[in-house]
Length: 216
Image 1 (spheres, helix red, strand yellow):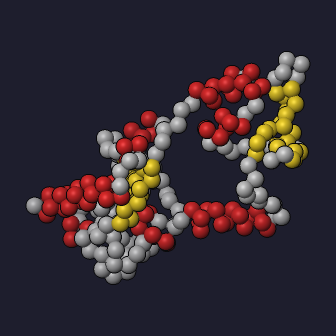
Image 2: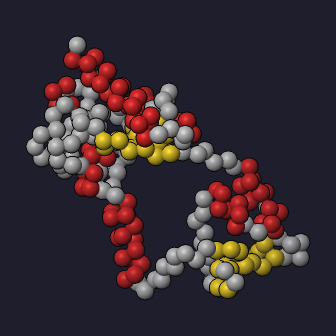
Image 3: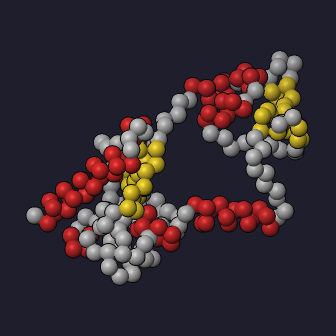
């Protein structure tokens, strides 16, 4: 991952990470739900899996997962596929799985807490070449017409590790006529105890300072 991040940091021709046209719910989740629904797949919400029902060999090592336990009821299946985050898989895996090194190594993984912050600006934050265009929000700038960088961006020395202008990269739902950038940034734990005004204030000051510098 570090190699990939360095590639994005130093090469302007590095691969572009294409974003959804709008929100994940509209452009990702809803089409998947429809695809499954058209094939009579049932989606159960508010039904947390409490236990993996599995078979073991003579040494107590797991050999086959044959079902899951939801509440007090056991559901058996031909195949079980689990897509779980790190804290979740640590809770879900039975103790017997730790007899295998690959599963035991999961408990050495540590999560990095993050906070996602969104801030709307009165100009185009990622436009670096056209000072006049950077401050112009008039007219219809939808469908990728707005100035700025149409890509996910990474920062090496800031509190936000990656960010994107959603009004540019996903204009379908995030572009608002007459308004500027909608920056979504992934902040580290330093942002947790700050108010909305504290999180946004440095960014407003940075934007204003950068604008003055480019005009000078």
